[in-house]
Image (tube, rainbow, N blue to C red):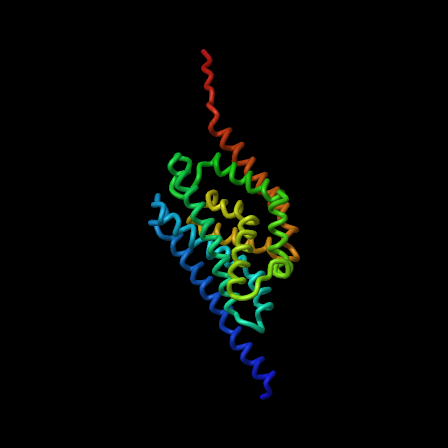
Length: 252
């Protein structure tokens, strides 16, 4: 073999194990979430630390799944250099979602303290407001700006590329912040569907992943927003009607 061929073989061997390792970890995470959703322990009120742990597990598994397009683009960029940049980028990306998880868990504990949550499910009026807010956010310019960087990973790397492992970490932090800007409201729908509902979490992950694909991402954002707004209004209307006192007229 000549030098070029040897380098090509070495390059392929460096890349070969990264994706299988990544998908193995994600698959194991989904299995763990499904197991937790079936456990009666997770359906009762939890401490702050266990709530943070639950949000961490959910966010890491779900948002790693949705990050496949940007990770694929980064793999193409670093193919001829060190794949350490790829892993460091992923770690930094998940650090940002870990911070989001701490904030979301704190919000959940606050809502529980106010009596607006029962275990891991919110009261119907609050569910309606969350659905409505998530739907309206789909039309915001900030959402669209963040989403544009998610659906065009190469544009993101051309604009914010930093050399080296430390540069990969900084890019991961930035993309994590961008991803939170795109998906934070959809993630809060966990309050509506139930924190331990594995099917609902899988559906949300699928929707958020589709929003990041270049060909269909921007095409589903507004229809999804309309559906969320309509559902939120329906839930609020039903809650209002069911809470209204019923007058009983007695005829003598």
